[in-house]
Image (cartoon, rainbow, N blue to C red; front, side):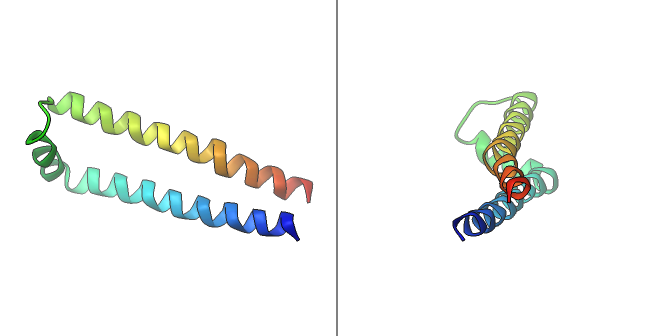
Length: 80
């Protein structure tokens, strides 16, 4: 029972975190200028630097999702 609960928990966490990642991408892609201007008030960043920071952040977040949620979920799925 513990394994089934853990699998369900990891699956929900995976779904929620992928939703956050998709929301981040959607806001970045659809409201790029607004977000850039908002952050430009606080930090002195060029557009290229701003884009690179967000791209690297999304990549790191996606790798963390895979490493901490997807791989353990698949391991539990295969062992049960």
